[in-house]
Image: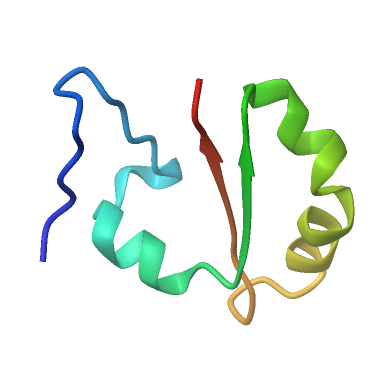
Length: 65
């Protein structure tokens, strides 16, 4: 499987540079927001939940600006 975007200039950032498809498969908590700085406010609880349980939970953020 590969990631296909409707815009060729779309970016994917995966910390550590791992495979984006594999990284998305690990995500248990996802936030979709209009601006990157909104994610830390909108998903504070989810981010903290994932920080407390590395390996068991993973947070993902999608910015759709």
